[in-house]
Amino acid sequence: MQERETGASAARHVRRLWSIDPTAVQRSNLHFMNRYMQLAIESALEGVRKNHGGPFGACITQNARVIAVAHNTVLRDRDCTCHAEINAIRAASKKLRCFDLSACELYSTAEPCPMCLAAVFWSRIRKIHIGVGRQVAARYGFDDARLHAEFRLPQHRRVMAIQTGVMREACQNLFAEWKSLHRDLY
Image 1: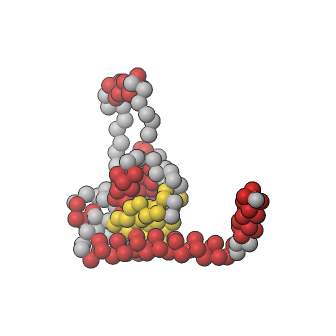
Image 2: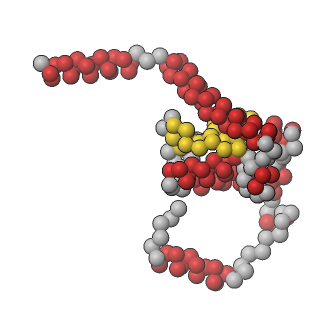
Image 3: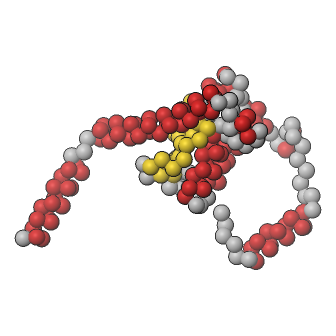
């Protein structure tokens, strides 16, 4: 009897799964995306009103759970790396006690700058949800087009001079030392 009830229960569950309306799932996903973006927006507004920095906010989620919410604090901290995405990645890594955020998604009020995009890449965040593109930020003076253009130039034509090979052997020995200690690759 118990076996038959379990089988019937499983059959009802399968029928329920097959009867899910795809548009309802999309609406549900949109609801969550809007909720997470709203948290990023509220954090950005808080930062703007407190003069912490520019109008940027970020929210990191994992399995439909909010892990971290942050805003730009460049002015408050007097640190040009304190962008919303970087602050959120730092908070999420601290909370989860790991640098690998591959099970996480990022909600950013604006398209991440090259520095933040690199941090997203290194943290292994699997997906980014963006409120507005970099063109909107540029219209308000937050223009990183110069950075994007700089990356496309050959090294000898870039604005910032780059000198390679300084104490090359000693620096290379650092990698050999690290490898000999069998450290984890991050």
